[in-house]
Image: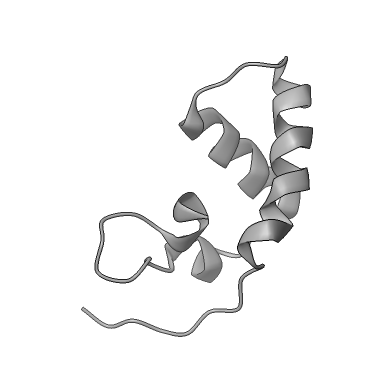
Length: 64
């Protein structure tokens, strides 16, 4: 497995997009629905979306 350093926002910078995503979805959503909405709204690149979070299963965006 090859890992690359990708520029992503800090954890705290996901808080407002999360609130906005929940509002847009209707106030309640699964984690997957929120992640999908944030990724679409923030326009993350394919490279950013593929960046893994350390040695755990899942992407850095999903983890944050």
